Image 1 (spheres, one colour):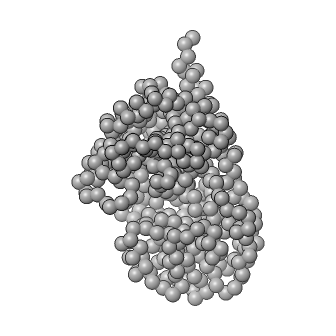
Image 2 (image 1 turned 30 degrees about the horizontal axis):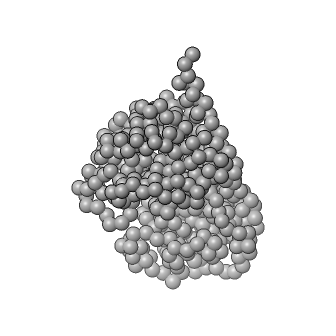
Image 3 (image 1 turned 60 degrees about the vertical axis):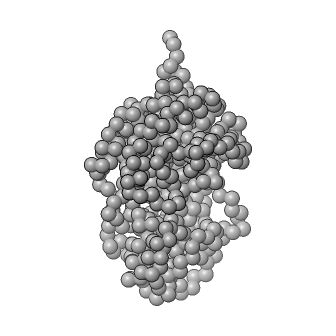
Length: 409
């Protein structure tokens, strides 16, 4: 099978977990004997060809007014034009058509469309190529990809998003299959009228390759001293709920608690957090390897305010046998079995997080004895072979469906 993958970015360029998951998936399919290639965007005016871990990667200069994936923030008017062009970018159509005619894939699997736009669907449909669309976030209903505004998740599409996504639900029926990385994101898209006539709709939870040996995974070995340590790891940004966690900790925690914050964000926001929440029991350690972070803590807190689709930090914590206190939003509840590998709280309830932190701290011995079981439960999140088999089966079903619909009787 010859599979072309399309995404905004590809390794070593990456903006989040979606790129990590994609790379794992592409390489795994290549190892199973399939011909795989990747088409991604680049901040240049050239076409570049690269080979990464045996995968042929093409990087195309973005056909828009500015580069939105990191670097210096563009002016407001440039961002506005960027989003308008990204509704259905006409300048990528010829590029996609020429590339697909050259590569002649059996199937195209699309991940993040930002920078490409849904014009990709129309081109591939016109060329009679079966399309699999993977849903990592709500980009198709929100140009900013998070449905988060004024420190709260949006309860519905605002007028601007409705206008900019007016024709997207109808166009979404051009794809052959849609896959949500969580039940939450697939159901959300369907509620908004997307993929109503798409014959194959499935949920395939993410899995990830963890190249970490057993010698650094030592569940249940943290000394039960008087100090209970909570931890946060990830991107430092308002939608991740980092201020909720810091505010709760500083204003309510007893002297026997400490908090470790790992990760980075925009320099001005990091500075703001460190100044406002400076405390002797709060340690900002910056970006560190997971094995260094998780050995320092008793509990991971994932306080997302936005509807986080399927955050990898949750199953990463399970991998090290560390229980999770998670927000009850997005796809997080699909990962946590309450009282078994973690607990859920309501970030809208000002007392909910603190109450749960107090409860797990009081029962730390129980959670420590559960760490081996938590680690064992994490296996499904890291069984790349089983995960790849599910994807392979999906691709074959898509080809079978497409061939059947286009056969001449």
